[in-house]
Structure formats: structure tokens, C-alpha cells
Length: 55
Image 1: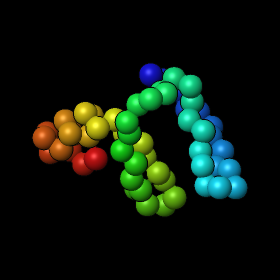
Image 2: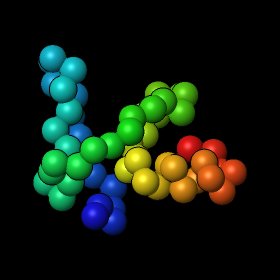
Image 3: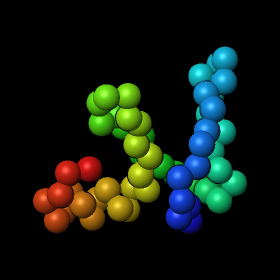
């Protein structure tokens, strides 16, 4: 699990290398606007939806 911020670089093909601590995980990606892209584990997002919290 990532506990601190990690810097990533988007390469010339638009690919991003994620930190080694999350290989093989399925993540949901969405934009929050203002240039922010969020990656979430699906189970955390489903829990938030069920509790009435925004993703």
C-alpha cells in the first residue's frame, strides 16, 4: 500500500509507470477535473457509493 505521494512520469506514448507496491492490482481511473486523475481500488469506491460519499 502506498502511504506517501509518489511522482510518476507520462512517457511519449501516454503510458505511466506506477510504483512497485501495486503490481497486478485492478484500479478504477477517473478525472476530478483541474488536471487531477484519481486511481482507486474498486472495493473502496463501492463502499463510498453505498455510504453516499462521492467517489
